Structures are given as C-alpha cells and as structure tokens.
Length: 600
Image (cartoon, rainbow, N blue to C red; front, side):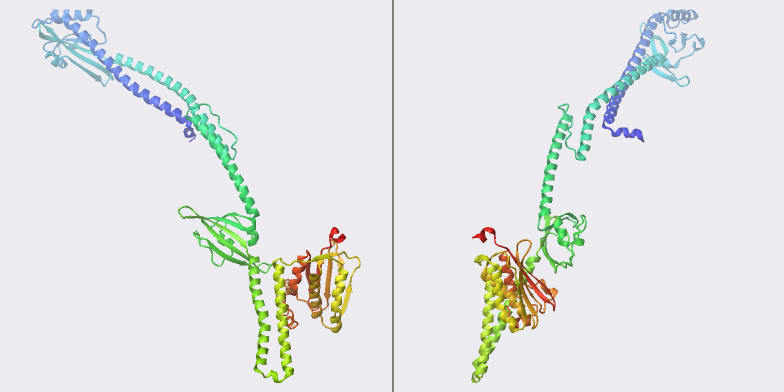
C-alpha cells in the first residue's frame, strides 16, 4: 500500500513518533485530569447536598418532636420545603424516626406515608451517600441521607435524591474543549514537527544524495555544513571521507596504471587468480607465450595445457616446465612459477603465475650438451685410430713390412693433424665467443682480397676439372677489415664449394656493391646442394649434412660457425641459399670504410 511508503521516510517517522508521543502524553494527562475533575465535581456535589441537608435539618428539627406528628405538622414542613431555595430537580424527603416519608418536594404525594428503606443507617446516627444509576433512563443520581437531631436525639432524617446529569454534562463539555485543544495542539505540533524534522532530515537527504553521487564516481561535490551539531559533524566527516576516498581512488588508479604499464612491458607473462583458480589479471605477454586469449574468470587449468591439473588452493610454490609445439618454430619451452598468495593465517586467497620463455636457454643448454658430445666424439675417433695403429706397430708385426709401417705412421700423422685442426678451431671459437680476439682491421680493396683467394683455389679446380669463374667490378669501395680473418672465411667457403662440387661442374666468386653501400661477396657452386631442412642449422657448431662424407674429407664441422662469428664481428652478415642437387650460394656482406678511414 502506498500510504505505508510514507513511513520509509525518516522525516515522517520523526513526525509520527513526535505526534504519537504527544498524543500519549495528552491521553495520560487527560485521563488524570478527568479523574481528578470528576472527583472534584463529585465531592463538590456531595458537599452541596450535605450543606442543603444540614440547613434543612436545622430548619425542620423543631418540627420533628417525637409523638407529635399530625397533618398540621406535615403541612408546616411542606411549607418550609417550598419556601427554601432548593434545586427543583432534587427530590428532598423528610423522614420520621420510623423511616416513613412525611414530606417531599417531588410534588407527588404518593411517596408520603411510605417507609424509605434507604434511611435505616441514617436513623442509627450515620451519614450516608451513594450513587445510583437508573439503567432504564440512563441517568445517575446521588442519594444523600442526613440525620435530624433534636436535643441529641435522632427524630428523623433528611433524604435527598439529586440527579447528576448537570455535573456530567459540564464534565463532558470540558472534555470536548480539551479534545479540541488537544487536536489544535497536535496539528500545531505536527506542523512544528515537520519543520523540526526537516532540519534533521534535509542534511541527511543531502548526505544521501552525495553518497549516491559518490557511488557513481563523483567525489568533487561537498555536503553543506550548516551547524556544529551531530549532523554538522556527520556532514564534515562525510566531506572528509569523500576527500579521503578521492585521494585513495586517485592513488589506486595511479598504482593500477603503473601495474598495467609494468605488466604490459614485462618480458615475462603474468596471470593472477583468486582462491578458486579463476583468472582476475593477466598481461599480453602471457597470451603471446600461450598462443591464446586468456579470458578473465576462466579456470587456470582450462587455460594451461597441463597433463596433470593444478590442485587448488595451492599453499606452496611450484615450478613446471611446459613445452609447446608451434608451427613457426620447432618448440617453445615455458617455465611456470606458481606462487600462492597467503593470509597471515597461511590460508590461500589467490595464485600468482609467472610465465618465462626459457626456449633459448633450453636450446643453449641442449647445444652445450650436444657440443660436448660432438667434441668428445670428434676427439675419440682420431684417438681410437691412433691408438689402434700404434698398438699394431707396438706388436712388431708391421715393422717387418716397411711399406705397411709407413702407411700406419702416415694414418697416425693425419689423425694427429686432424685433432690439431679441431683443437685450433675450438680455441678460435672460444676466443670469438669471449670477444677476446683483436682484429687488426685496415682498409682493404675487395678486388685484391678476392683475386688472391681465387688464385689459391684455381689449381684445385683444375685438378677436379671444375670451371672457376671470377666476376668483380672495378668500382667496389674499400672495406675496413682484418685481412687474415677475411682470408680464413673465404678459404673456408671456397674449400667447401670445391669439395662438394663434382667434376665437370663450376664454382664462381663474385662481388658487388648493394644499395645500402655494403659490399656483397657471393660464392656459388653447382654441386650437390643442401636440403631445405638443413639450411636453418647449417651454421651450428659440429652440424653436418652428411657426417660420414664430411669427416672423410677432413672437415671438423666448425668452419661455417667460425666464418659466421668472424663476419658478424666485422659488422656484416652471412647467409646461405641452396637447392638440393642443384647447387649452393653463400652471400657475405661487409660494411664499407668510413670516409675518414679511407682518407687515412
């Protein structure tokens, strides 16, 4: 019901309570007042009857001599009653000592000569007053009896029956007046209550409106402080709270912005969850690592492709390595660090997951292990050969045949030289890795360097019936490089080209200046070529396309790795293009000399 909604307002609650308190107070006062007023009128009314009875007793006592009742006596008493200024509404009776009515003011003489039983106690010397209600007429009467004494003897009694309608009419009129006064007082009080309630509720309404505005995010508006009372202090406290919240939210936004900036620029992925494992925060790097969108409120076990799901809540740190297959890469290895967020009571309330891409570290670790294994294998093979031939020589059987002994010693020497080359290459790679190699760079003419390299391999090409082509331009700029190291790179690449090019095919060496000013040297052959799957790893240490063939040709598997390190140390690049069974081209780019270096 709509009218009940009024009581949802504090203002009307205050007014209603105020009016109810006033009404209750007025009712209590009214009940007390009417009780006292009725008692006052009652006793006053009775005292009036007593006074009248006393006067009548004094007037008629001389006429009430025992044993002298006669008609003349009754007449004299009637005359006395008629002459006295008595209330006409009262029924006054004079009763003799036998209780018989001898005179009355009612005008009805039927009661005369009739014994009145209500005066029996009075004739014994007691005053008597009672209130009687006529239920048929609905009237109340006060019955008062007073003894008539003559010379100390009771000779009769005065009996008065007085209606009380007048008294109660007066009380009723006063009651109506008081009710009107109460109604007027309540109306005025209600009006004043509304005004007073507004002085309380208006500031509360303003604070409520401000709280609603604050809930929408606006903290600039302030509540007006009108007084220094409790509500004024509440308004001041509310304004202080709004200021504090504004500062706190501003600080929180700044911290949130810093956190988002940190998360967005972290090299590691971060995912935060609640105690149930639902994602609440993540960064872009985590999505890049996992290769999927990390949806908020999604279970962490549904996001991570784990064989065994994480049991939540987690109370201890855990570390898991996750390997993912990618189309564009061989594999990706992610280290997952799970750190629980704990209360002081050690209760888990969340989880922080840090994702680290350790693919490169894992690759390096695998390469290191593979490198150690390759070095061990490369050293073990010649050592085994040397050992076996030396054991054969030691047994003395080969010494009886000089040609066989010479061949054994030749093989032993070749394997020792192979070990020496391998160790020298390893030492050179180690120096290149540690950046301890100092290149004696100087301005060089590419034509001179390349022609010298061509001269070193023309004879080998002629022996294998391989066509050698040299294509150089005269206007090539000088390069700033170390001659020995560049010669080593060219010798390694030309040696590989000649080794893996069959008879009747060709090897070419050319150079040109690119648009960016760099000098590009190309070494091409029409040999056996390299399969596409091996091109990406061709510059790795100890990597061979055909291990048996490479080892039989005396290669250590480190030449291309050394060539790449030297070229990159000069600020250049090296790359290989090849088609299997069609040929291979290796392209080297070297930076030109700076003008001041050239002029010097």
